Length: 491
Image (cartoon, rainbow, N blue to C red; front, side):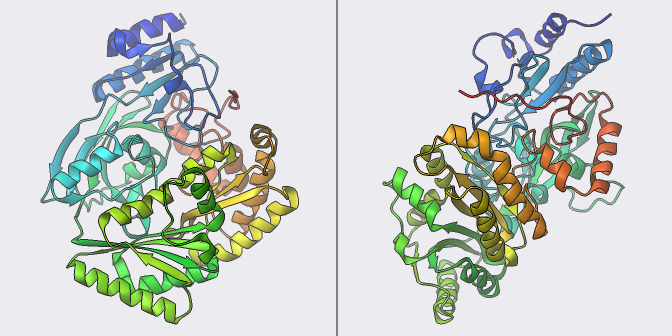
């Protein structure tokens, strides 16, 4: 006999408590994505308190699916994703499983330089817990006050310090995961060496909740740097920015922790919409601007000396047109505030098209020239807002509607046009159309077009082996697995 939606909901209430299983009232915080591109209708929103409850929810949904109810599960962290990876469809048959209640920092091992946490822990809380122990958790994102570590792992988030510490994948030592049949895999090892077969955590990291639900993680910690210096530098081209990156790597070596590039048009939006954020250098000074961060393990004096040596060499090589060095941590934070407000300034300007791409750092100038030229052929009045993590080759090559145009209509009608022009260029330069945001529902068609067919076949085989019922996030990542296309609702 087929389990009904009402019967399943009653069982979910029993598992997590009536107050933590909801299907009525305002559920927009769970059914609406952060960018307000899509709004779904969930069968229920459940908020388990621990891993055992997550497992019980998965078991109940799996049993209902086997009985004939077309239910599926959408794992959700902080709901700050940009590609609809944690947004339910409008079928009314998807259970949103939110990890927001699971926020315990389980243990910090100072000697092993590791911390074990619940997947629902907010990223900023991890940073602060590490800092309270005199240690560093280096993952840093603009959304760190609301995104959670489980979501960071599920999407293999990047951020501003990848150039030294790597993506979230590189910071993970072990995982706890609830599988698609409701079993609990406890792989919360603090080991840095463990050669006992397939490294299952790497299957889960970046899988966007399609293979299992991450409920806990053991993450790497680092000693806090003794000193940190920041500089805001103007260059007259991205070619000079790439040369400056190479010079910085030579002078600063592994102490180079951040190398962000922002073209002038991106900063002009910040200046327009956030005038209280004063630019360290006038925008007329360059075509692009670099926010460079250097961390030193010895002393503030050595940090300042090494940074000054780099800047002297850069000016001598005629790579810089102007620059400013932060004289305090407060000034450095103001520089980072400007960088991190570009996304908010774009939102204030209006709806726009986001493109999170990567190409080899050496190819960035040529790629940007080519992509802008191709985009101008099909959308001649569109505005390119280009910024990102030049140190690791990741650009946010966004497209704003033309001045005075209807931004909603532009987004609705020109998304595929812009994507084809940009992603074809990305592909030609050997890059990726998704550098750090994931694929979600929004980019499944692009995965089908640009991913190697053999790789896609292997991914489908893994999905089939680990989730034969197609219970977990069935509309995400793999286009062949999805039953429907996302219904986009416009407010």
